[in-house]
Length: 369
Ligand SMILES: NC(=O)c1ccc[n+]([C@@H]2O[C@H](COP(=O)([O-])OP(=O)(O)OC[C@H]3O[C@@H](n4cnc5c(N)ncnc54)[C@H](O)[C@@H]3O)[C@@H](O)[C@H]2O)c1
Ligand SMILES: [Zn+2]
Figure: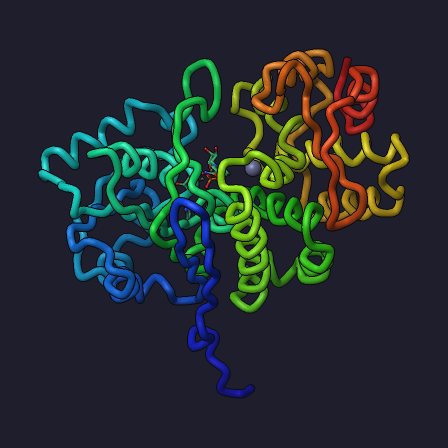
């Protein structure tokens, strides 16, 4: 292995055959340099509009532009607070000004916020033009770029406006994660742990075992976890595109997580960090019911703790969180659906969690009254 060169590793392809569209997710170090030919290969229309953010474009735009033979990007801001219709409007404006037609494509190049907004623009402009995601955060690579959920926030709630619109392809280059802040990187890792808890004990064990190499963003360490996460998400959305059943397990950790995000007005936590707490809440609920072994609960708590500290929650009130959960999208006919772990790699969905149980689980992870 003396002359081993990681960029020469073959890319991995994962097929995602959803009912509305079948597409490939290609993952490989250096994939960014081959975006142009890859788009040609899948027959992406020649008029390609790249939507990115100023930061991502400054860091990786020159490489991207070289790879596609020049690009005049549509740049929009990408903080969560810009994930709204007025920003999507700016994308429409640029498309209209350039007379983009049905034979045009949007290539998203950024994190989940860019992917969700530009994906929504692609779904709605002229009732739908071609869409390819080139995600640049770990969270977008393992989660938001796959599965077709696109949309924006409403002032009264997150992701209230949107559509299911599958991309024509997803191209993932783990090497772009080298510039991601440590906090954003960790935020994505909590979602990787989520896939481990719901669907793959081996993925869970790998994150624990290779934590150091993963944090060093080594391609060797990133490739297997991104690939496995994409495979799990791809399989689940292919089987349940519109979240009528199985796809709901991906909400593991998200019920309490969303409540934490909402009561702190989306300012304190990165989404993944809130999910980190949410997984601890679900694990405590499950353990208290005797559905999860104490040892598995401990393994989850240890792995989450090993990634680093989460923002504090002692000043947040369990009652406020309970109230926020009542407004969650996972409330169906007045009942809150909870994804509970029953082992590392297996879950069950219940709809009979009592307020008292939930309150003690929230207290156990450190919430105040
Ligand atoms: N569609 C879905 O299925 C789905 C799933 C999960 C989350 N989401 C959505 O994804 C959003 C969160 O995505 P996110 O965590 O990627 O946040 P983000 O898009 O806001 O990106 C986080 C930050 O990282 C920066 N960044 C992006 N790539 C970078 C890089 N390579 N190097 C340095 N900095 C970089 C961005 O500029 C931004 O400041 C939320 O709005 C959430 O609702 C959607
Ligand atoms: Zn999530």
